[in-house]
Figure 1 (tube, rainbow, N blue to C red):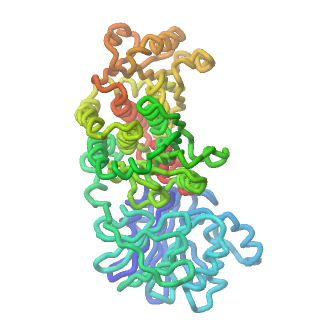
Figure 2: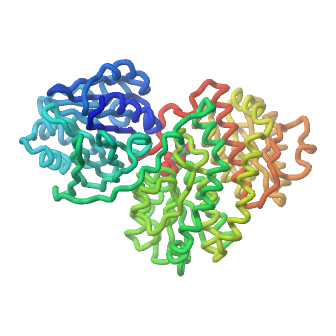
Length: 587
Ligand code: M6R
């Protein structure tokens, strides 16, 4: 949510910042802007809409120091005025986060000031201008001490050739380049420019010049923060021959599964130590990560016979969870930044529980809050809709559940090792286009399944509505007749996932119930004879035979392709669905 980039060096800043913003556009695309300093003057361009809207004007900006922003609107609608950067006097800044007490600060310190936006962020820059006393770091500290809420800020001043960066509860990294230094929300912005980065901690202040970076803690004492390898590679951000990142990333599902199970061995012994005496497991996350948590719950209960719950992170935090020393909380997050998930992890630890992070982001805040980390090796995921990270999470959680059950990973890895090839076969599967056509014309799509298939049904529904805007629900197949069946008519589509041989008959009852109400049906299944039974009455996608617990890796590919193809038929941009951003760093 909101991407920020800053540069201070020997090259023209706006060109570098523009490229960085393009790489961070998954964090928000309501508006974009860039400001540069040159000879004591700040010049800026900012506009509503995508980063590309500022390309022409950005090219004309000249200066070696600059900042940029791509916005996901929270306070103030998407508009040119509310686009960042915001300026006051000599100061200009970009902000990611939410200032909760901005109204109070306005009333107390900025009475009579003229504001040019509705944003909380403009209050910060006005305060900097008001309280500036010649000591920039002291001024930034004074102002940020007044703020309630979350922020990552990059600040420039017309008088100087430097940037100040500070953060609380929102990510900010520093990058070390050959001909300058950088600030950004996330590593992809710096791919190709910086081999090394530093992840700032809450309350840190960094002063960047063309020649160096100084970092200070919350008391303005100089500190040394670790330099880490920037894992974001320029090549991994290329679209290649794919028209959209969503397709590219679905095609990377097999590699994500394989890399994730290969990486597990390096963390297994640490996980075993953390798991000693575990009596109860809570898996938490948001959106897709929660949906993979539902699968993990089944794995843990089936393999380890330990009670396991899956909780939406934003709910978990506010329901007085019961956490004891023998409770393990597994926090699942692609980005490792999602505020609700990070806060849930903090809460669990503060209550004496142990936290295992399952994440695609090794340097993220979630990893810092965890006792142990299970890596998801999906690689950079740019499309707002999670695809390869979901299958990576399922792989990691499968391995983790085996470890909880005391089963050595060698056997679990052996079972997983056939899955990349089977996922590849799914990428070639026929029949998705016809179902996408049905979905695109429908009034609503109902994803149904039982047990583990129900968890994938929820994910299928989330994916479809997120990228195509077709109304959709995920439902347990058995629940259909208890209410949702009322929605079935000639315009409705049911996508029924059936991979459990024992429950197939019962799920097929749901198929018949929909058909008898004239709804259209698509079935995703590996059950023998199902095509024949439904011939001429429903579309059937046959998935390859596999271990019954690993079928979500295959059905996931089918529902992801279905969402993608439906979005294209409806002329949606699947990479940047309306109103959304990839990392939600506010509550
Ligand atoms: O980065 P996270 O995994 O913590 O993100 C959680 C959700 O915001 C995310 O999974 C969201 O639901 C996806 N856009 C769904 O495709």
